[in-house]
Image 1: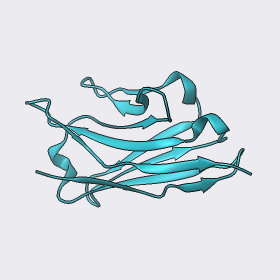
Image 2: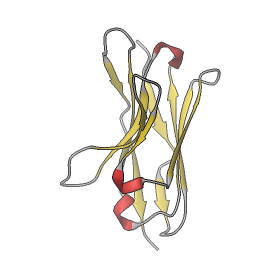
Image 3: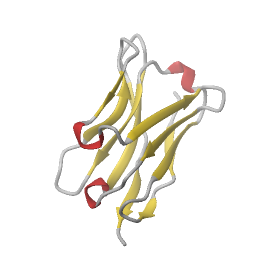
Image 4: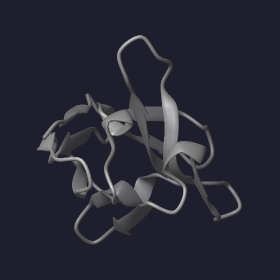
Length: 117
């Protein structure tokens, strides 16, 4: 089973941008849908951006217009670009892959993003 590992978290200034990467231990082509989610302290995990079964990309309301996702099957990476960072973007960010037939989910361990000037 392919494992996922996020990287790129850390301290980000308000108004700045962040780029996170999710790397598979093997081929991420084994996943159908993939996406990014986040969880802030005391809050439920929420969608950042993800693809659907129909191949569309959906974005969470709190990041609309600020998030983009890039999938590179050749490099086994899924990247997240988030612009115009605010304190509300501070969270642990997770990537997720879903097997196309079984709908089995694989989650990474998460990477912490802190927002502070």
